Length: 219
Image 1: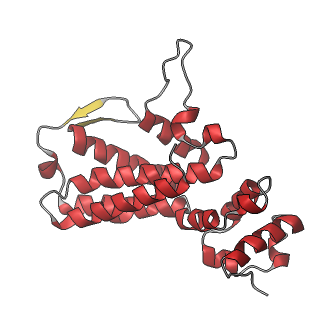
Image 2: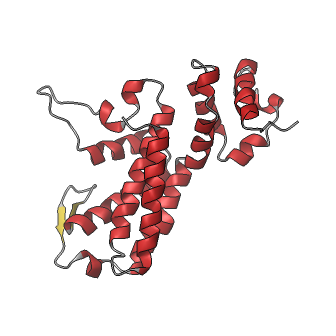
């Protein structure tokens, strides 16, 4: 199973390729690649959030029918998890990326609200233009990343709080992600301000993680 770092690396690799293709004749592929970047950013966030190893990948928690078949496709299950557990902006941008990429890949897609399929009669490079591709790559994908607080989640992962206190690590990360949007906002906090959302022991563990990176809370 890929870990947090692997998913982040793949996501950023895809993100760069999507950006690269925008001024090429294959700009329509940047839509699909942006969607695949979003998938890996989500899987990274899920890996960071899950305290149970069996839930660190979306497909590991996919519900099954009594006969053992999956109730959802992998993409549909991810969309459901995002809709149920993450901010509305994440769901909206993911849905936009998913629908656009399905049209670009298959020249058709199922409308989420009506469950009615829509079929195209032109190739994707005629259905979409460069501005459509830029919207996916430069608006939907960044909005999705921001809503999931990917940069902050990545920073917390690098602190390796698990090595300091494996029992407290997930709780501390969850509290920080619930209360702050960026690394900079976190580092502006004092011990006393952080104790409004976590215990003294939690703050001590966080400080140890920051110290290993040469960082500290505001005095």
